[in-house]
Length: 262
Ligand SMILES: Nc1ncnc2c1ncn2[C@@H]1O[C@H](COP(=O)(O)OP(=O)(O)OP(=O)(O)O)[C@@H](O)[C@H]1O
Ligand SMILES: [Mg+2]
Image (cartoon, rainbow, N blue to C red; front, side):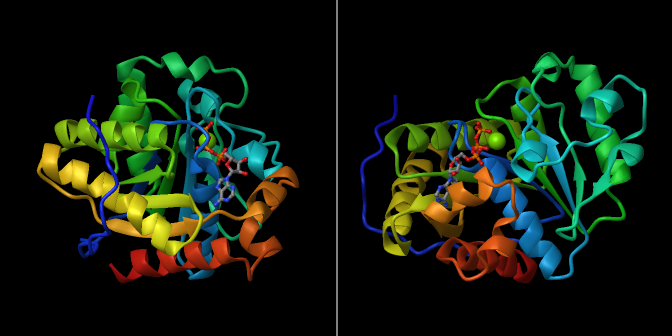
């Protein structure tokens, strides 16, 4: 296994244009992908982008749970052919649209490759009215996570300072390099104690990528650890609405601004 040792921060490379479709992955579970995807969708919508948030966690979808929604239709109905992708999209008061996953059953986790291809083709076709699609992926690196990561224009790899998160983020980036060598990956450090600590976490990951993969994913941003995140999720509220002045809100807004400027 690759050893990831701390190094001094390196300056992040400039971002290429990020593209319309962003997939959020991490390998390790519970690092904050779903919260980040929802809050980024909200931040981009506040900056007047037409955003579709797609719950691509086929095992344990929970965008709807974090937002306290009970969608009439979800991805399960789309995949079984009962409704179209377009019919399943709902408009959220946060100013963005959502395609909810299939909560709780885990039945989509074993989706067959041709079905997944059809779903992604449908997503491509139905997403044309949107300027941005944010795809929240599940934990792990199974076939469908890898396929959806490679499908995206840009893979956003979320990492925390925990060693297991770092090794899983590295594994995610390694597979993405093999699966989609022409696609960009970027890194977001979440739950950082402060910006400097987050940049050190990034530098550790970047060094391993440079040494073993021959390419360094740029740092898209650092999001600070903030107890209000947990509170907002518990109350199933939108973070930027509940805590507009929180440090983590400023961090997500900076990321949205950077994405729009890229
Ligand atoms: N910046 C942050 N500060 C504090 N807590 C955070 C932050 N980001 C995420 N969390 C906490 O991490 C937990 C997991 O968040 P979330 O469900 O979004 O992770 P996930 O990566 O989507 O998990 P899974 O892999 O199970 O889908 C939440 O309970 C949340 O409170
Ligand atoms: Mg999640």
